[in-house]
Length: 398
Image (cartoon, rainbow, N blue to C red; front, side):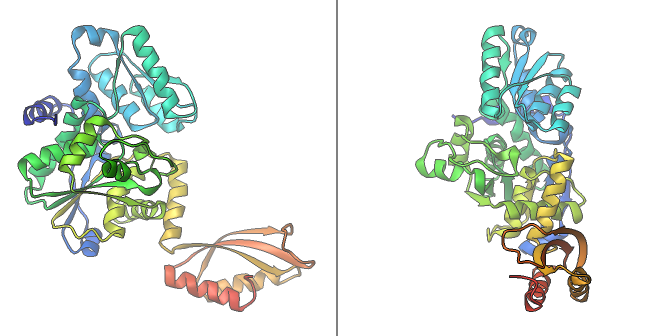
């Protein structure tokens, strides 16, 4: 059974005093690319940096006095952990969060700062979840699932309520998709008010359980999980979200790692928004895929919690994918002036050198040769091709 309008309305009342009504920000660059007005629903500006506390707070707020006294427990490596910690502290309830040993330090520190007791267990979130369930069984604490519960979906549905209020003429909504709680909630809220609105879910291609699940008409675990978008890297869709997505969502699409990185970079440079790779999935789809959506279009940026070190890597990946960062390995003569001739050629081609790594050890080097790896800023894909061609013509590339 799908969540009801009464459940969504109750969630909206409960959350109104504590959640931010996140802004809608117009995107000129995305509007130009898509041919329709595009607005960003900035859940990356929500409390704790993502949409997650909407569902977590509503779920915890509905616990009985006895359940509250026993506390809550969760397993998460990121946004859900922070959402549960903040919500429980706000409601005066103790919380324990199990995180994988390799969890990002900023997310671990934030979860502790919001008031949770953090326990590091296992190498994966699945192993952490086993420990969280065992703790719940031993102590009577309530396990707060990140997406597979009616209250969680009802809480996330308030994003859809706000979209309808802030953008009453919305034609399409594009939403990042992991476990499915956010997409299910938005679809339930919006389709009840505007059944004509087209709703699209976006997964990372390298962690995409939903296309196969929808094809098989049941949740099916992904066989491959390797993506920078850790916030939507969920192996198995939840039963509750699946029922909503199957009935209410118009389409589910996927984007690759380069498209995610390029979208994150665009949001940072043009919209001045810090968005994590998972939160940028909808923008990536709008930029890279031919979705043919009726406008105006709302894209949900679902979170902005990203490790600064990861941000550095993803930014470099985005620059590379957009043709603005080039790394080449060249072979030069091992004699005075050999490196200068390479650098002079790059200067003539208008490439700005960022880094040079010089090595005399490589399998394919001949006596009297040196291998040089050069990283340089370029002005786009066409400029990159011109630089590569010039290097090849000069004999630097094999």
